[in-house]
Length: 77
Image (cartoon, rainbow, N blue to C red; front, side, top):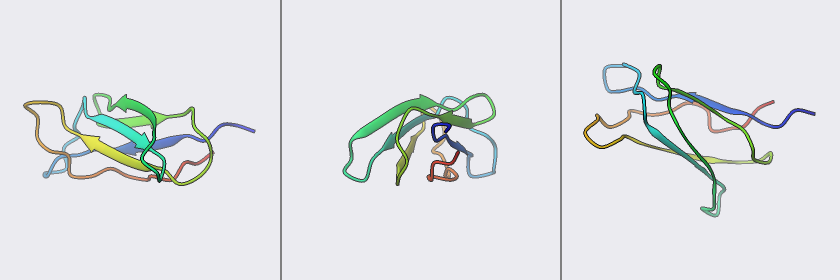
């Protein structure tokens, strides 16, 4: 069985991809499961955690526009 993978994309207000955005994934109790950054296309992929509900927090790097949102917060296989 493959480990779950969480994928998504972060974009700005006009829909442009935001590279370098910090992505933090926590469990429902707020414990950090992992930390990564978006690539040049504003996309991220993360593995290394267990099945279940996850909370995704996206934070723009200093001097950058605020992220508009991110996609799926449900790990999939």
